[in-house]
View 1 (cartoon, rainbow, N blue to C red):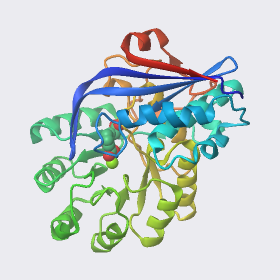
View 2 (view 1 turned 120 degrees about the vertical axis):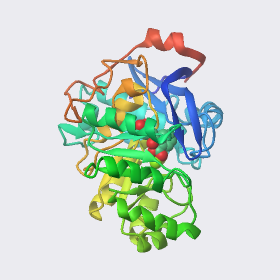
View 3 (view 1 turned 180 degrees about the vertical axis):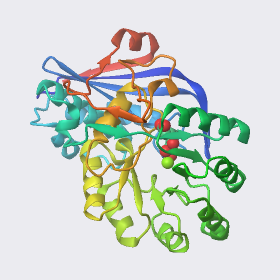
View 4 (view 1 turned 90 degrees about the horizontal axis):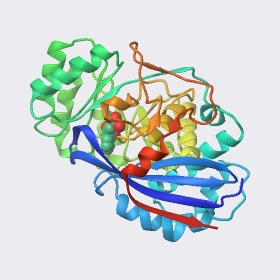
Length: 369
Ligand code: OSB
Ligand code: MG
């Protein structure tokens, strides 16, 4: 596969409903899309960089010049056997994983299309359907949150995750549990607590949560291990797991019992598969995280979720929860039993709506070999 040209675009899309985490509220997304042009085949990728450097130090204004000045020139004109060769070509650039992932994932898609193979099979997946959960942001009132949970349970989702932060946590979980004693429930703190709050965090144990995601610092593993020894509830790491090596470290240290895999956070499909494999050999279940993706990233998350050890419901949910109109066809839909059925078409099996994307594009740059 010869990489002849690469196109970058920024598109703007308003969210159907704002999304609030412990680090802030998002109303509208600025999304970075990548297209790799390889001998008549186009592969699309989406970078999960945010509008601000808050979830991660990467953001759209760091990813764009890193891609145009360094990462894209490292690929242009290269002939590669498979997308697996991509990480080595980009290795000289340290970190910038979300920028790298967009390129590598676009190449996986191109390779799958070229080989007329479903992407999930190329990735080594085995599942024919995947279980889905939802992530529900902080709302203006607990009543509003309960109403949203009610809607998602009625839609069939198999796990509810709510965002928490100091002042929106024990009180909220109490209200949820008193209404739904038996649903599969978890929470995500996005690093909103410190180790001084261990007594407070211990109160979470009474709610029989599936997990508490990333309670402490975004780059910490060591203190999560200390905290895990103090809690009955399983800790799940998100932000801190940036590679297979950090996953191995976390598991060896006992810092978590569950791992959230986001393909962008770890730098692309190759590393995501390695994280999956490390967790599998340690008998630690994983699930696929989400970053408010459009259909392009969403369909790729679905493909990744077919790997064997993705045994817990992921934050992989329907397009319509985020977008009035998605940029792929058909949109991602979830059945009434909270699953997505996996198809056998080449690539992700979805059609990218190039005309619609053109109308949403505010910036575009093509680099050629
Ligand atoms: O921590 O999982 C997170 C969204 C933006 C940044 C961080 C996170 C999230 C989510 C959204 O929880 C999950 C989704 O895309 O549905
Ligand atoms: Mg998270």
